[in-house]
Length: 524
Image 1 (cartoon, rainbow, N blue to C red):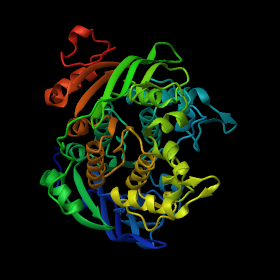
Image 2: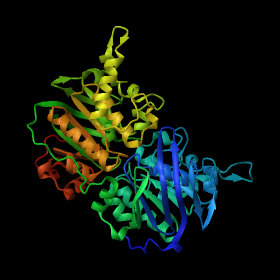
Image 3: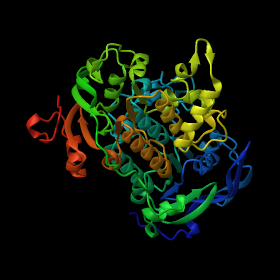
Image 4: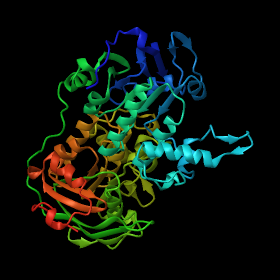
């Protein structure tokens, strides 16, 4: 836990927000917020989805303007009418939702809008590559600056977004959920870089839902709840229970606990699944596994372990994949996504914005998109039944929404994730594949999602989920599969798993079978 001066040390304050309100049609996101940012410190901002964190950060970054209130920089009021004005004032931001161009290279993305030129005539690509390469090495990122961003995994894109912010001469750096898609090793690298920035006097504003992470990295903490500040202290004076109470008025994280029930027979079997990499080797290297009815199996591993790629193979999204998928004892011959959905497999993707939702459509239209056939007779859509079904899932998942016809883009990140989960459940799956199901979801929403997962499991649904959060995989799984470099390195009943063992297996690489736990059921 970081040592820090008392939060009233006004001399350390580089930026303040005073009396900020923000009114949108039908809602008030901020209600008289006062917020201070201190130089050379990590200023943590925390709150549930919809509490107003992102709105406050957008005001500081020049994306939004407050309805009332002011921003004070170096003791003087300042207008920030645009992101360009904020950048000119030395304010940078890493957004939770990635803001990258997939058809451009890493270097081009890092310098977009502020390209390095030769005498103002043409872009100095070599200079941009050199700087981008230095930033990537600093973040221990292995890809070349010439790699297309569209070819990167979501976690690698997150690192590019961070590199993009570091490339700017910022003295106030806002990080909105910077570790949401990063592995534990990458989080450690990021924290080291944050320590370097602090030593240089940079003020960090840090938003995250991972509470232990906040206690570890933060110097000061401010808690938002329903648009109001409910607590502001030095981090040395708080612990996780205090943060939770300030966020949601409860003293427990209330993660879902294991509901003891008997598992059914095998519902899913994956046999010798293989996916070659374009550059050689295998992203998924001869993986075999099984899943029973009512069982929740967590897949844990570091970035590049092949977890997401494995789910894509099972879902029929990878044409180059080989191997068999057996559902309810029947080999699946249809290798299309539609065919797999119709047979009873549903996937909740890692990137909800790009793959899970259509932002311009309503809550109802998004949730029923994959299950329209069940509401259709010949050419007639039973809109009433569709709305009733959507309303039922909205209630079960505790989605906070003004109305079913509200555009899904108007929801907070956590509520959007719940819509994606509801969309999958509405297909009536036998097997639910979940890729980082709690990414970007606050602690209250996590508890709701985890309770829903446990309830579904007791009803006989088999759940296979991927997570980079060690605590989640330990809390939620009936069985834990560990992957490293495309291979299964461990298959452990939860009762036999320890955090140390799981972490060791995730770094095991291509370990021989004799090094694997005796409890492993199916190994490549």
